[in-house]
Length: 86
Image (tube, rainbow, N blue to C red):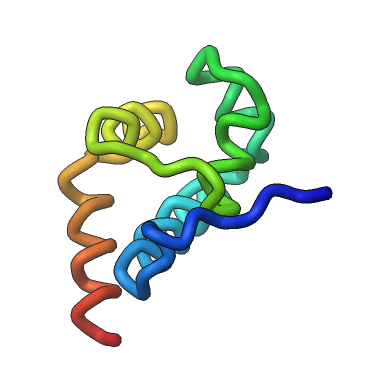
């Protein structure tokens, strides 16, 4: 059976974070596997983050942004902008 998203992190704000991360990965034409290899992590690490079954912390957020070649501050601004529009 598939993993269930963690209820405590499934807020609209957290969903915005996940959407921005996924969009940034796709905009860079990277698959989850590409990103995981670049980060030295398992494929399931990225998949679980994007599905919301694994919570991401600020250090991991910075690692993801850096691996995507994006300034973490700019990526975080995208998150806060998306939250503000909801």
